[in-house]
Length: 322
Image (cartoon, rainbow, N blue to C red; front, side, top):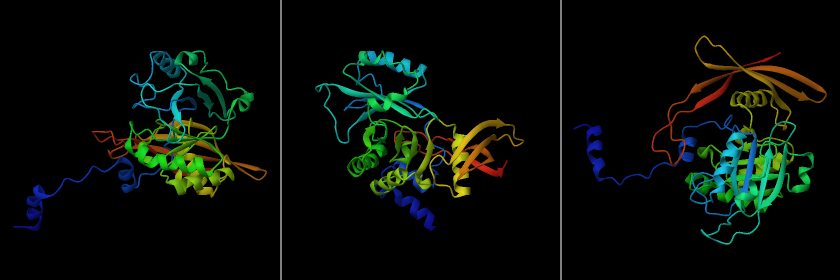
């Protein structure tokens, strides 16, 4: 009898191994973080201490007016995110006082957060989700906001890895720090978004999260953890990451995307040309980056997934000046 046969026959006596969590699986397969930031550039933040459902406006946890709000947000292409202070939750039916809401815009040149307060979802129906966030938004509340995804109902990795990170940032920095519901990319937990710019970071623990925020405050990006900037097309995110690595440029906003367009490819690839501007001292140099999108091997993208899924991954294949 071969060793293989003996091993196979012995499996019935072995205890079943626990399922591998999605964040562990992503690390094991070496999945890159770059070019995975959220597609949204506008976010409606709603303070809801708890409990949270698997989606932000889960009908089991909010009242009927939330349905109107959800439709208004969808029409405005605005992502609703629930927020709460680290560790703060209420039991179902708990006392409801005045809570914070915020409308954040991460679009270039319009990076601002407007704050307000609410008691019932009806109070939010008058908020214009399409209106520009005014220049005076800073007077309404904090403009350095750190969101840390901790939505365990949506994905266990976010809760397990995110909560210690939220606690560390809240205690170790002067950023206005909130736990939040789904930001996208459970497998990159712990993941954070810094508003109003919308820069997203992943693969964090408390130590690396504090280092990311420290360098950010100094005007630099920690590229090893940078997922990209929310609101930018993923081909542009991939081009900007490639340019920053190629140029050795860590300064925030020193590398910007000026245009992006899909181009035909003989091999049928999802190919893009992206214009990149690099600002250095008094000089601005333009580059052209070619980015290809390709379907990756199916993997476990969330702890809640019962089937493997494949995502499109965008990577730079050429980089030239001009």
